[in-house]
Length: 394
Length: 182
Image: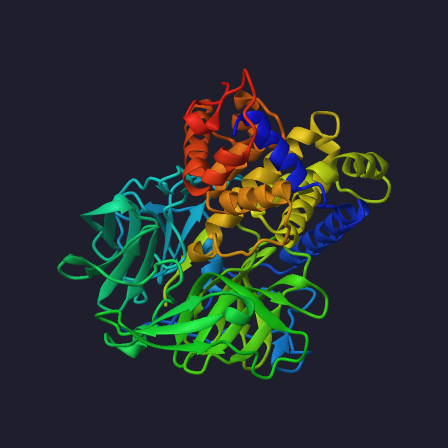
């Protein structure tokens, strides 16, 4: 085959691919999206942020923060379970995590944290790291991560991504772990000490799993002891394994979300040997027709017996809507589904974890961070428009 | 400027009418799935509409192409890796060209997203290496290396393409391992 053949094959292979949407669809959807952003902007001006306000309770395993207050629901749910929808306009009650939107005021090396609530990596329009990583402590002060210079992660094909990803911050907020090409970098945020653990491969993703850090590349995953730094390979995919519940203990099963549509499954592996214990088909549970999960994306997060993840879903409106789901981690039944509609960008709404009140933390464009209580349907904004990658503790 | 009312709407619609077929087909070649290709194109067209006032007097084709291809690479980077090669072909065919099309479809799905994007830009969109690099926001060297790797991978995963396609005089031959024109 020569290049002319390749051109010809490419041309004929798509000759019956025709647009199904009118040309005006993009214009109309852009107008609606712009209108939504304006509304959010107006709300942002109207609701003044209260500096030094209440401190969110992000499931601290250690001593509780000084001013732990449950998030204030501001929206009465209007949709019955199990399918819920966000309100047309999010409200943003004062929340310490909103301080991530402000600049760092002190280097981490000068003022380590007692416990970090979140990390934030600003990015540019091309999703490249743009400025220092911010470390928000439970004292409300934003530090700059100055003790290590992170390079973008990359794969063997040169595709790059910022080193800060959801999941790099330990559940207790005391450490951060960054996958880097050829090494794992662990930062003790309470002392600003840095430890480098050489490993092989284009490492890209990190998951905290109790006393270990799982760090992986396209073709391998290592389990690294949090204390000793000893590493061994483990037969689990870093791309599909859910972040374990930190309260579940070191022997808690590793759960993978695999497949798509009717082939979606929860695969359970033993914690240490990663031996497959069981596979449960993911079912719609009590979802009304035609709702179903098409595919999960981003990291899944375990909390008690539940698992939350972002997903592309089939709704009454479209096959391919954005959504988030909460599953029963034992049976695979979908317990709650958040229908985020079709007007948001693809992959807009990655789940970032749980808080200690049983609410799911997720991106929810145009909000950079929102809180969804699947049991009540309450949804509130936490951080307004903020471009970058957020990792929260817990 | 916000895309409200009829401010620029007609020009935008004319642009989309004349370009969306080709853009969708390019997106399909990258995604291997028409539904995802339409999602990808719609997202790029929304971004174009949001920026239409500042883009329309420049090169909106280059703008939307850059959005489309970079989003494609970004999307696939976020997807589950094991799913990348698991999507079944959309169509079934029994003629020779049809079989080659499916072989090409399957082979493209086995390539990493950026390599797929490079091939589509170079051989479907007929862009130069420089224009391909601009569209993807990478260096020309990256385009060359990705293209070389992609063609080599195509030969590995789809030897039928090399055997069945007709050789043409004076053109680079993928089956012999020759690099394509710079």
